[in-house]
Image 1 (spheres, rainbow, N blue to C red):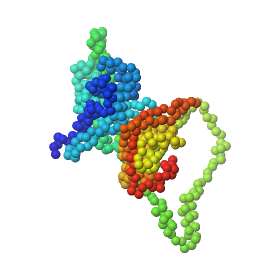
Image 2: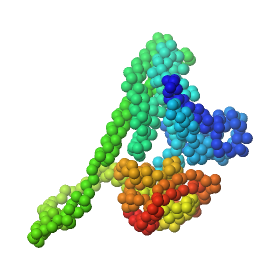
Image 3: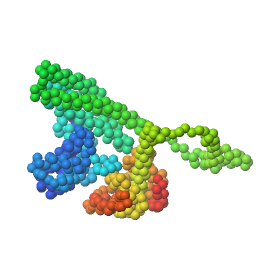
Image 4: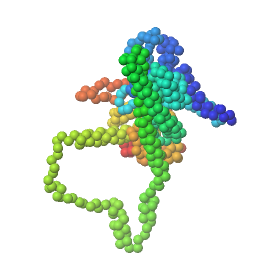
Length: 550
């Protein structure tokens, strides 16, 4: 077909992003009428730019509270002043209802010639929990691309164009324009660093969800920024140093600088600081890029080895042939059991104890040994983090296991409200809700949408036992499949939203010796549609069977 239509769906991705802003869903008629359509459009994009500026330039966390403060500061430009409560309400509407679409996955149909239509997911921001409050918001790759192409259009032409512009501005002494250009270079590097951090988190969470094309595109883009442009940035640094030297010579020649010269020196100092920061970021990213490359290859190698290793079936290889073995004399059997089975079942470990160690003189331990104390604290911190990861992994598996058990017991389908009310009667309910793991896992399952257990069993999907504490469905199913290979007789579970809301009563939060009132939240309820396999429920569908032993 026509070559000019190659990657046409990539062009339509930009249209899909604009459509999500302009033709937004979940409209609040009261707010829309108060501000007007064009004003809401401007506020949405302004919030996106603020999130980018907050996370890239200042390197601070962007929370809902900071977004509300930003809206209070810009609304006077629209001829409006609002209270703190109204600003928070507007921030929640723009972030949660519009940009996050109330948690509902938003897609757009794009033509991919010559194959046909494909659905593209539109997601401009993501929230990060980090195990603490409040929630932090960041831009996705789509969000960064959208904003850079609406203003920093030259970014699409490459990092090199930005450097050339900066060099020309310095040579022509356009220091006021050059300082803004140097800030843009730093922002582009910070954006690349954010992309690398998000990719590393995704890689550590689930290799199967990390396509090789994304890895190649990221590494190629960073190589272009680092390897090809590092020398150019050093040349720019030398030009800035020459400009500073020229201003110093002018000051020493005339005794002082006029107002224009003072402004130029301040701008040159700012440019020099930005260039130095850009060089530092490039060096750090070069090291981090090599680390990500090694991590990707190591995880990929581990996955290949895990897939290719052959399991040794002891029953098939040893026990079954041994049961069919016939002995002519009992001594032969005794010798076999004594030499083969006894070491396996009753190993005799060498008992070694040096009694002299108990009576030797002991060295006096120093009371103030700070290096040892620091090492001990570091070890305790690492141990606490490992325990937290293990606890979160157990909680993820328990939640998915309880969901499968409940689904097997309710093949007619059920709502999340019903499932949640049942969990409230469990002894470990508070543990399941700790760090909001239960709600985050259900949201991840809703994003997946379709849990095809039959397909998972047929493909024998690879899963890594070294989970990092983040939710990984393959890890949970792998652990559950050890105890219940047929997954309680389930074939598929589909998850979708309902029009009604669910009111959920959270567990108590203990504070000192008192307990705070139990908080209550309201969310859109979810519907779980259950499909059993043809032979129906299995014996393992007993909710009490194997619970807590995954």
